[in-house]
Length: 99
Image (cartoon, rainbow, N blue to C red):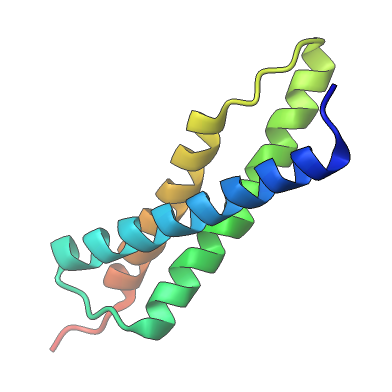
């Protein structure tokens, strides 16, 4: 049986990994789209990824409880969180005024 401390440490490691993935995805997306990327953007990308991964984890847990079996779906959670950063930068590119 998993203890509370073990589950908390697993959740913390997962959130840190999610933040690092968001940082990397944000950097790569900005380079591909040729958008400026600074420390403020890095922090925003990291926090957005962490927040979306928490929300996605709650949604996946609710679905798993309703279905009767537990499948954490970490791949999907990280994919959704990373996709939110890419969508954010695409919207940011679209809003940028033409020179």
